Length: 404
Image (tube, rainbow, N blue to C red):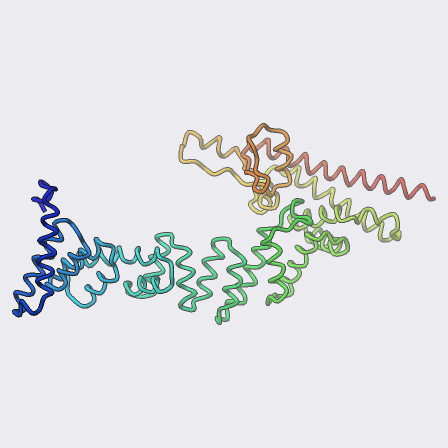
């Protein structure tokens, strides 16, 4: 090796020497003595190693019964199938064996196909050790594929669920024979719907994920309460006035602020107020009571200075606290900011009031602003929606009086 490094011009000579020894060793008619046979391969291997030309060096070392050297050069050549095979059949240096095992697990795992994943699995003590290896090194796709391949569909589904891939998770839960999988599929379905229904922006505008979740809900094993929640989300998305009216009553009676404001706001946008002119006196009284409740809920949200810090209300309104940065000097300013997601009902309003670069029509960017500014805009927008309802009721009342 040292000679080759000092005199690179001599590398072709080493290559010729290596090939000569290799050729002589393969000629069984010339050399009959097994030890001489082995030494020729060893000379060839060492000459290849000087170059270095790892693949033929490994093959020659293997025939020369130098198993540690063979495994090393197979590893350096990226020939992990051969390196692992040498380890299985022969005793090699323990440190090298550990190094090859670790590298081979990465090599086979990154190939992603199922046979390669199983090769990596067989290098571990058991399935749990391999799953831990996959999780620790961020191989989420491979983890799901491996779990599916060994019929661990519930575990694969849980990985997808944790990643927010609700549709894929549900489909995998349904492939599982475990009794717990049906219940988990139902919980995953509901969590996915909650994560994809937003105040105002989801009305008659469901995402592709939400559409698929509604399809999956048709044959889901849901409890009565879960069916009610799915029905509520469908009524919100489709703006069904009769259903929303009942949900609005129920949730406002239960003082469920989050559901009440969603149900009441969707009801006011469903065309229900336009039907008041032809409704009975009893129905008009009910509608006016709901309008009053809508006003009460809006005012409660506006007046509660801490409600917008709630994670659930933030998600519904499409906002979030800005990510905390590592720089401690910026901690105070970061804590006083909010991020407005494209799903927020104030996102378009914010874009109209600030100067920004070009926006992608298919995927608008989130916007981060001071917390007070965001909260004030939410409160103003909610009050504007309430005033719209008040004006609408006033117009309906005026039209009704014209026929008295």
